[in-house]
Image 1 (tube, helix red, strand yellow):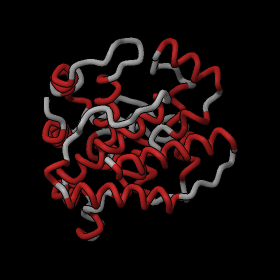
Image 2 (cartoon, helix red, strand yellow):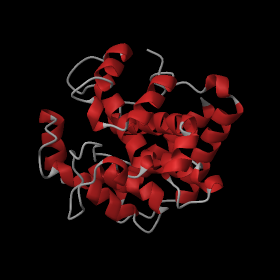
Image 3 (cartoon, one colour):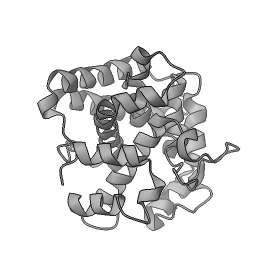
Length: 240
């Protein structure tokens, strides 16, 4: 819980800095350390490595959502070690299994939302219409902000967390729509964590039961939109 709070604090600092400065330079070393400490605690105490529900006490839903997606992504990443190594064959196995960059990308997956016009954000908060072309620009906006400042494997989470395994989804900008295993494994993991939290805590409805959320994710029409290996990992770390 202390390690999780460290992640929450860094997410809060990220959003606060972005709101103050349009061209903010973020202290990524601090964020790397926060994710590293979280991973160390989960590896050292594997018996606690389950998603415990809402660990963040905040009125800022974007921060709560980012923290939840980060925590779930890291948990699934640890469970998927062998799969990640196999999916990242071009990387040395020792490096391939490291999930720090997965956590860093998940922490800032929605950073592009902060860069949208206030009217676009307000409209989405009212309608939650993901087909809005202006809203669909936030992955590309966020990617442009972090590109070259963090590792590519972390940046791809920001860019591709709304790409879907079946080729649906969106990315924004002039970036191509990807499908299946052309989407980086880290982005596939964050996509499942993101969808879980969106279903679990819908903006216009009360919090939904975990078992209902999981049931929806593993049945159609949603199941084919996500990597089946990642969905299996979600079931391991989120008890019904």
